Length: 408
Image (cartoon, rainbow, N blue to C red):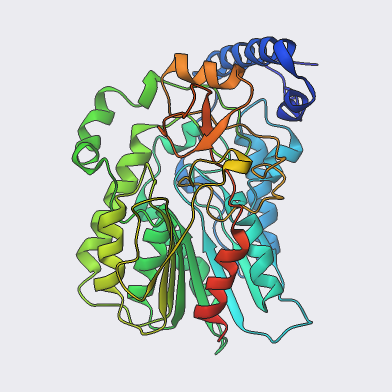
């Protein structure tokens, strides 16, 4: 098996972690993490940086587009990603089930540093409800964090607009879905196109908790291009852990662009899904936007929260966020639309997410047993490590709320 410099760094590595247990599991996991971290750092400076414009353009033939993107990802992806891991990031399409009434098209947009995989479970659910679904990939994503060093929000918007135009060729109802950054981009399109028939917004990052810092990212990136000082361990096959400052700067610019355009309320069906414990999004600000920037009677906000979280209006639904029997303390930014049986993120999924913490907390979490799960920085009730919640036990509750908004 090749390690540093090879393309076979432990496919199914995290599955092996699940088989191991006890002290042996902790030692092996920690050794493999150190090894992979060394490999990632060794390759950072030598990996080619492809210009953002080299990312395959949208095409009328979605299969052609998907194949070109897959070839591109194979060429520029992190060296340790296997063919099956690269495939997790590739755009995909699902056809509406022939067994139910046809309802239209859904174009889905992922979040910052994410990939098409984030919509895997919801896309299947939408197809089962009678929608044709396309999940796209934004330039710079799904391959190597270095590809985010020069990308721009204007390119992301251009690509999203092209996909929408290429698919919106008849009178079929067309809907947009956006997760995090994708929610920002989807809302821009809805403001620009009266043809948009509805919005599905999951953790839409209209306002970040870090806005006071992000406004200076344009300057900071000139002196220090990476958060954490450079590349860090990349153990998630469908998302980046390493964060170029440019990527967060472009996200912030996208939100500013949306603010400049948002001069009128949007009168279309909207479903929004949030967690009160989101460590990324300013939840109070987003709830205010939901209440004041959307005017259609057919809109609902599904909020996950624990004690003290209450609905502010009849358009908000609050559901429990904790599941002690599953060792879940609350829902996180990334967990809301991952089903319990998700192959990577689910209850028995192969990925343990400990990133976003200091190195000692991170490695302690990765080496630990008996985790609790919660949003980033959620305190432990008993000193056991808290990893990120990666799935929603109430995924069916999300679908029930969706049906109330879109399938009446």
